[in-house]
Length: 376
Image 1: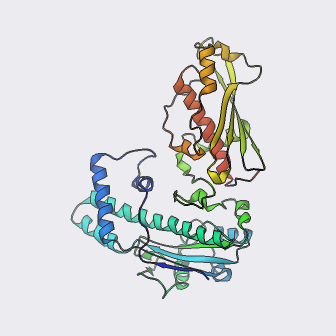
Image 2: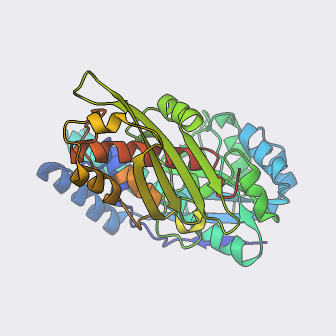
Image 3: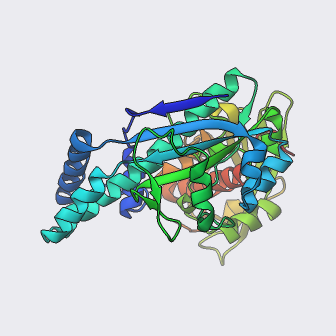
C-alpha cells in the first residue's frame, strides 16, 4: 500500500492560478501595487508557511461507506479496487497572519495573503495528483479525478469520518469543526480512486483527471487542462457549432482531422453569402493535440467570396497561407489574445484571426468535453 508524508512539499504556485483566485480575467497583468502585494504574500509564506501533504492507499471498501455520488460512480465504472485518502494543508500560519493584518486594518495585505494560502492548497492538491499519476503509471494503474466532502453530491458532514481514516498519521495539525469544515481552514480532504485498468478512465464522463488539473509541468499529462471560463464564446454556441459545423475524423495513430464550415456574408455588395472550409490536422492527445496542418479555402462551388471588396489573388493567398499557432498545442488557443472582429468577410487580417480563433476553440471544446483522445 502506497503512503506519502511530506512536510516540505513544493509550493511554487503558478502565476496564472494565483491571478485566477485573485479574480483577474485570463491574460490580465497586475498593476504595480497589486504586483507588490502579491510578491509580499509569496515572500511571507515562503518564510513562515508550514505546508504538508499526507496520502495513503486504502481498500475500496474503506471509502465505499461514504455517499459522494461522483466518487462512487467513477469508482464503480472504473472497477477501482483501492483509493488514496489524502489530507492537504497550507498550515495555520497564513491564517493567523491574515487575521492579524485584518485587525490592523490592512485589508489589501489580508486579501492577498489569504488568497495565496488558498492557491497553495490548490497547488498542493494538483501536484499531489501528479505524484500519484507517476506512481500509478509505474505500477500499470491509473488515478481517477479526486472528490472531496463539500463538493457537489458529497455532504461535508461526512468529513469527520473521512479524517478518521488517516487520524494519528498526519504530519501536521488538522481537525474538523461541528459544521464539517476543517481547521486550519486552508486544508482539504480528498479521495482519489485507483483502477488497475488505465483505459477505463477514458470511458468515464469526467474520467481524465488531466482535464481538470492545472499542474502544467506534469510529464504524465494525458490531455490538456481545460479552464471552463477560458473560451471567448459561450458554451451554448460551441455546442451548436460542434453539432452543426464541425466534423472530426480520428486515425489509428491518434492523429485527428477536423473540418469546420464557416458561413458568412460579405460586408459590401448587398451582403452576398459566402462559405469557407477550415481543415486542421492535429497530433495525438497525449502530445497536447499539436496543430500540424491548417488550411482555409472557399467551399467547392462558392462564388460569394469573389464579392468581397478586397478580393484578389493576394487576398486569397493570404487566406491560404495564414496558419495561426502552427506547431503549437491546441490548448494555446485559450491563451491567444486576438482582436474581436466579427465581420463576415475575410478582407482584414483581424477578421481572419477572429474566425481562426472560433474554429480552434470549437475544435478544442469538442475534443475536451468528452475528455477522450481516443473516443469517436
